[in-house]
Each structure stands twice: as structure tokens, then as C-alpha cells.
Image (cartoon, rainbow, N blue to C red; front, side):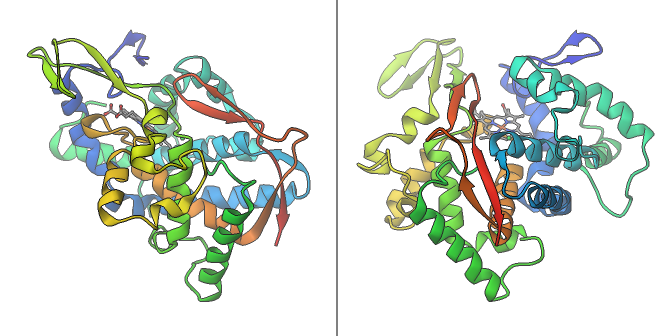
Length: 336
Ligand code: HEM
């Protein structure tokens, strides 16, 4: 999966196997994806959340496919963060330019953002009172010349968790602990929410395929076995996340409490084995954006709506390619 720039294939942060090239690509932009910088992006996420809330108010009582709407939401947030322009998925209620289908099929999205969007960005007037990713990247480029160029919770049906989560959010709301749009700082104080998000990603990591690495030329000893250089090895998040020795005998249960009721040492072990965003030098660069988005979005929704299962089927579907995607999450939004 390599993107194209001006019809030429180029190795990306995602595709390159060369650690030096990877480092050269990742290092200059790492700060832009840091948690401290996420605060600059909160208004971009809030704007999209407002559109989502308004849409659900319009569609109240009707079946909506949350799998589709959440993906539209996530894409609009990324568009807004990157270019101060929402792609318009939620407003148009459709897969604009077939970008999502494109991702499922190939790398159209990457191509669209790298060329067409930059061109459009340069032609449009921007809100100068706030920043965006591209502006920041260009700022860095001008300064030191170092840069050359998506699952929420999967157990709505679990009533106990649902009620406990909503109770936590309502209590924070009653006590004045939530702004008009829940801030990242506020969502961190919702400890049950944080555990719910983690547990959802433990049971259903967004990437279902193994995370590959290549043993360096000199070889390496891994789990007591010497492996020659170039050997293709991998870890699989779903496999590790269901390891009873790490997460407990009830790994097949959706139980957020496991993150709250364990010993500090065991929590460390669990955190180290949490591979939803990968690990080490190749860890997901969008991790903080996603953590911020989920933390802010979920309480914002449950402050305003109850969500009811509205599908004729008892469960949603899942499909794994590289992403492990859900579909047919048919629900009804009901205003509180
Ligand atoms: C909940 C949402 C997301 C999940 C579950 C996720 C998951 C992952 C995983 C498992 C990896 C592979 C890590 C490894 O091999 O150790 C990865 C890599 C990557 N992700 Fe994400 N990701 C998410 C959101 C995002 C977003 C929003 C962006 C873009 C802003 C992004 C950009 C990337 C990039 C560029 C890499 C390659 C990093 C590298 O090789 O250095 N991801 N992601």
C-alpha cells in the first residue's frame, strides 16, 4: 500500500521498511501529533460533533447505520483538522467522492488528500484565528526545512455497562464537570468512559491483521529463538488481546472494570500488551487524535441521546481486511 505523488509511487511512513527513512519521515511531524498539540484541534472535532448531533436530531427515531455515520464523522474530523475543511460526509450524508469505498478498495483517499486537497486548500480562504495540520506542517517547513511533504464501543447491547457509563456522564454533567462540548481534559476525568473505550479496543482492535516487522540484518533472539535477518515476524492485536494470562480468564467478556480493578503491576502488563495502536517506533501516528476524538465524542452523544438497537438482526457484522471493520450497526437515536 504505497501512495502516489504526481503519478510516481513513493514509500510512505506506513509502507517503508527502511528504519532511517521511516525515522526521517516520522520525526519532523511527531510533535504535530502529540497530545499537547491535540488541544489545538479540539474545536475542529467539536464542529463535526455539532453536525453529528444535529443530524441525529433530524433522524431521531429512524434507523441509522452507526458504522457508516461514525466513519463519516471520523473522516470529517480528519479533513477539518488537516485542511480546516470538512469533506462533507455528514452534511451530504453520502460517501463523498467514494473516498471510503476507495480506501476499502485501494488508496484513493491518500491520493485525494495528497494532491487534490492540497490544491483546493491553497485556493480557499482560511479562518486565520486557528490552526490546522497543514498550516503547522508548512510552518515547520518554513522554519527548519525538515519536511518535504479511524471503532467506538462495540457493546451497546451490554445494558449494565451502558447504564453505568451514562450514569457517570450524567453525574459529571449535573456537577458542572462538562463544557458545552466535552473537552479532552474533562473526558479524562470520566474514568469509566476511559475503561469502556479501552475495553472496546481490546475486544475489537481496529486493525485485525498481524502487525509485521522484519528482523534486522544481524538477526535477533526472540522468545529464546534465534531468527536470521530478514525474517518476517508479526504480532496480532486480536490474539494478544485475548491472552488469558494477561487479561484474565474472562477475556471473551466485555468488562471495562478489568482496567479499573486490577493491581498496578498487572495494569502495566495489560497496557504493554494493548496493541490496538501497535507498538514501538511504528506505533500509530494518529493515536492521540483518535483517543481525543473518542473521549470527547462518546460522552457528548450520551448527554443528548439514548441509543437503541434497531436492526432485525441480533448483531452487527464484522469484516477483516487489514482493518477489522463493523457494518450494519443499525440503531435509533432517542433524545433525552
Ligand atoms: C481508532 C483509530 C485508529 C486505529 C485503531 C489505528 C491503528 C493503527 C495500527 C494498529 C497501526 C500499526 C502500528 C504498528 O505496526 O505498530 C497504525 C499505524 C499508522 N496509523 Fe493508525 N490507527 C487509527 C487512526 C489513525 C489516524 C486518525 C491516522 C492519521 C491521522 C493514522 C495514521 C497512521 C499511520 C501514518 C501509521 C503508520 C505509522 C508508522 O509506521 O510509523 N491512524 N495505526
